Length: 151
Image (cartoon, rainbow, N blue to C red):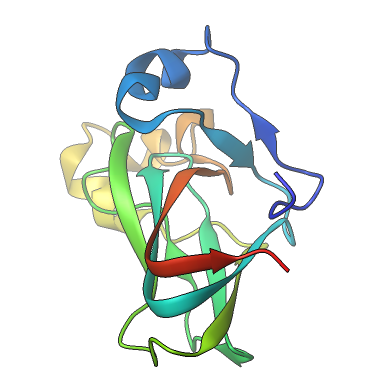
């Protein structure tokens, strides 16, 4: 777990999310502190993170080769009345011969939850409930077209 800043922890196998997703994803790592980071280097063209979207999902700032994306990537969408498996594309179409550095960092603000409101019986009350609060990011595995560089 040298790629992860110290705030990350692996979800215990008996936790509800691990029970639901471990068979398909392997170990799930979770963090919710702003500034928590996943950093890796790879030689290749594409990098993705196998992760979870959910009602308490946060958003991440993605930086590739020193270039930070204009907007954070939410780990929440209009279907997030429940948790589900997703894939976050962090780098695509890069020079496959070059070594690239990727940093994914938890943003301090949770994403806008209004996109899910139409699915709720009482959106005003429900969106204020603990279920829809949080900046949690849960990641499992990397998909790299190329090779992870460890030195």
